[in-house]
Amino acid sequence: MKKLLIMAITVLLNFTRTFAADGYKVGDIVPDFSLKNIDNTMVSMSQFKDAKGFVVIFTCNHCPYSKMYEDRIVAMNNEFAQKGFPVIAINPNDDEAYPDDSFENMKIRAKEKDFNFPYLRDETQEIAKQFGATRTPHVFLLKKDNGVLKLAYIGAIDDNAQESDNVQVNYVEKAIDAVVEGKEVNPVNTKAIGCSIKWKKQEESKK
Amino acid sequence: MRAQSVQTMNYEDVKKRLSNGRDTIYIVNFWATWCKPCVEELPEFEFYSENQFQKPIKVLLVSLDFKNKLNTTLIPFVEKRKLKSEVIWLNESRYEAIIDKVSTEWSGALPATLFSTKNNTISLFHEGTMTKKDIEIFLFTLKKDL
Image 1 (cartoon, chains in turn blue, green):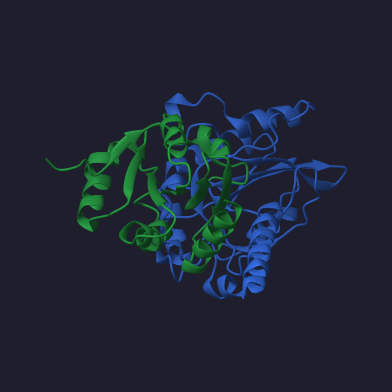
Image 2 (cartoon, rainbow over the protein chains, first blue to last red):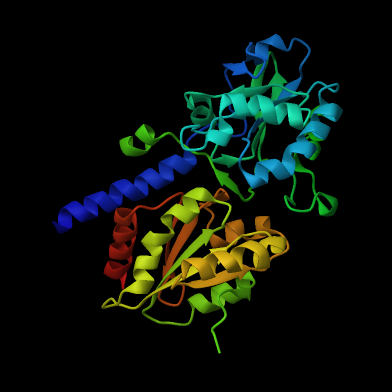
């Protein structure tokens, strides 16, 4: 019995570690994806011929932290899409447990908040898993480098979710500026409080 | 006189609390009333406040509710649920700043739980919902290390 328990602990602890370490890291090459946009078209990064990179943001409708950033994401796309770094928002949440995050509700929310960027549905949650996204919102900045997309920054949008007026560092803006100027991105990883991504139940039991 | 249902502390104060009991295992659960999986797993932690155990176990429910929801949402929630565990509202101007202090393994997603014992020297961390089994395994691991 004791042996079994120890085995279980080892499995659990290893699981916790690998889970956190999974997904892309800064510098990794990121393959393209194809996901359904709220206008029912399929969107992939290769369609953006002039893009120098992308601000991929895992987000959703229901999470208060995602809501706090909606206006800031719209403003970010206004500023950076024309500079070659369009925003692509992806909602990976299980809409059975969280009906607010359904495809239909994504359309409604995008309209209410005048989203000026693709808002894609990651129905299978595969893309969120590939990226190693853990929370909403969770940003992955990609830059084009010799024809491939590489990860340049992972983390928070800025350093103050609750008070946009008191932001000291706008991490994504800073990272894009560094990429454009050919300088080193610093910091390349940041953390933020957010809602956990709501994984589907059958995946939970597989763990 | 009724005990305060929710105490206000910054993270340094919480850390000091963890250094108090020598053999006490502290279960520090980071949650918020707006976080559905957090609210759903509260009974699993409440179990350890409702019952007595051979080794002392203390549950601290550290809320990251927004400041303007403290009186309107958090306190009514705690009183309505009659929570037995100690509830602390985390008074930090930027929650982002405490993530790595809690654990470098924490990405920032809620819920998250820290198990700490022996004057805060031995700790285990878990991001995401914990089942009854998960909690038991963590407690077993810590007791073994005592």
